[in-house]
Amino acid sequence: MQYVEISTDFSAAHFLESEFIHGHNFKVKVKFYGNLDNDGMVVDFDKAKDTLDEICNKFDHKVMLAESSVDSRNIAGEIKVQKKIYDIAKEDIVFLPISATTAEYVAEYIAKKLKEKFKSQNLKISVELEENYDSSATFFM
Ligand SMILES: [Zn+2]
Image 1 (cartoon, rainbow, N blue to C red):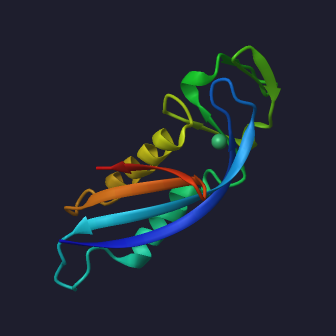
Image 2 (image 1 turned 135 degrees about the vertical axis):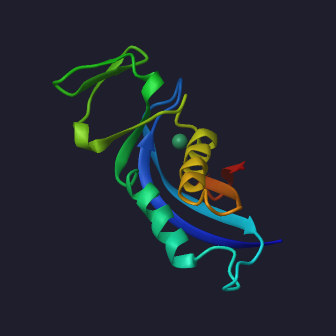
């Protein structure tokens, strides 16, 4: 078995319980593990890169919010999270179907999206999401 690796990055804001809103320049490193196909590839680099960019571009320059962490939201754009009210333009928010916007959960979300797109291929996928040079989380499936 071999693996190929691709990467991308995005800038986004998030906040976890007991944290103030803040941002990171996230780096995403993805490994696809598998056997070589008839063309001698584990995965097509262009397709893999395009797919990863498509997923991550949705987060770029946005506020990432876990759907379940939002107490309420109204049509005026006000969002209530942990008793604080934020007025953030709707188009600046990306709601994610995860429990919290930790690096762990976001990495898992990206991995599942990739797995969906490459489900016809027998690949193992790992996604490493780096918040800072000294901290990252990896999800493997
Ligand atoms: Zn953070």
